[in-house]
Image (cartoon, rainbow, N blue to C red; front, side, top):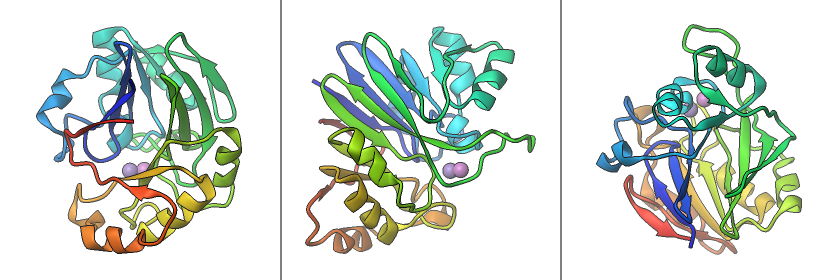
Amino acid sequence: MTEIEYLGHSAFAIREGGKEVLVDPFLSDNPKAPLSASDVRPDLILVTHAHHDHLGDALHLSKRFGCPVLSVSEINDHLDEMGARVLQGNIGGEIQLSFCRVKMFPAVHSSSFEDGRYGGEPCSFLIEMGGRTVFHAGDTALFSDLSLVADEADIDMALLPVGGTYTMGVKEAVKAMRLLRARIMVPMHYDTWKSIAVDRQVLESAVRGERFSLKVMAPGERLVI
Ligand code: NI
Ligand code: MN
């Protein structure tokens, strides 16, 4: 039974068989992080890009729990130097662990560390765990190659940014869903700050008549996929 928990912004925990995959662990400074965020026990941390609202607590959590982090080479190398455990990987590559399979895809965005250093290319993750497939799009604009992700797997759930301003907005996320052919859309990267506020009604009317279902998760909410 695969379970997903929304930790606010773009942070999610996916759990199955006592294992936990944590994506974009922006928890300490995240105004939307639920109380349960302090309960994470990651076995693997995935980071889509170096912006602080995604890299978040990755270093701290990796050191604390001794769990590996996977991202693009520039972020892997940076975290490795800082004393984290890292896996080697980059966009286009795939890693197979005992409890999950992760494939890295591109995202159309930018990526830099807080000090301004280049963070490599941003990415997205296709995650297979417990027979379910979740796609975490990272921060991205709409681009047609999202359809290549759909060629790779039947996606049960797509986690898509909808906040606009820094990423695609609601309208583009609906188009992305058509390219991804995923069963369920979960919006992310919105309402954390005023600059990415999204009206729930706008979301609901945008998906009316579409083939997929919309699941708006509240921070702290858990769902069995
Ligand atoms: Ni970003
Ligand atoms: Mn972001």
